[in-house]
Image (cartoon, rainbow, N blue to C red):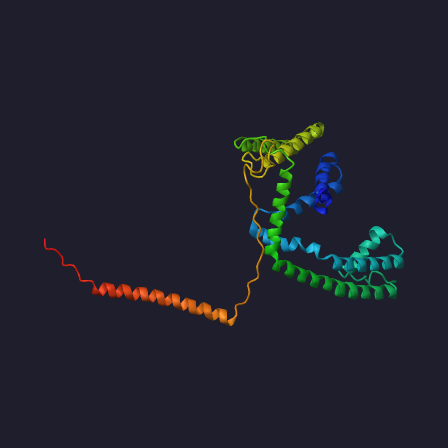
Length: 311
């Protein structure tokens, strides 16, 4: 449907593209660089070419979808302790109170009694209670839920792997219905793809080695965008009409396509009578084989040997 373009996966892809564009327009913004580096390193977990590696990564990447309730409980507890510490000490919320609260809750860093001789008793009682409640109770529950969810995802990794591959195929076929797929021939596809990669590599190397790259920033940005668009179109070229949308002068009846659907069937347990019938049938087959062997031996024993002719 049309609303599928507004799903979380589509919005996340649009956000990643926006971060990549902002890298060229705001190269002095440290926050954009940090987010872009985190996004690109996270993209390495989306590998789909190696089945063995994908089966190991899927249970880890699927954990975030099942840890919502436990994450909300931990964040609520952390916010409650941070709010109480902020009211008690009357310090700035950022960065003093949040830093002290994070050190107390996550690393169980107790206040130093030797450096602070006037530490009130309420701070010590609060620190003891925070460490006991959060570090011992909330974190252990979160780790237990994490282990259970990982074991559950590991048990159904085969099904999730098939769903992931089907999702990739669905996205590819959906885009192939929109993008033009008959622009290049089978010979021109690898040539254009290699030329695109060569131009992108040359632009990136030139940007890294050039000392006056700011003067040609817009030019390199436009060239990289054009190269990426060309590379995207090349990947969806279909000169053999295998996945692209049929043209106006071509109907689906000219080249029929088939869709295979499979559903799992639970194997029923065999009853005692059915198992006995199978054993009897197997014994009959063995008896038939023995009869054939016996007949062949009797026939060979009754057949007279032919005398050898003398030379």
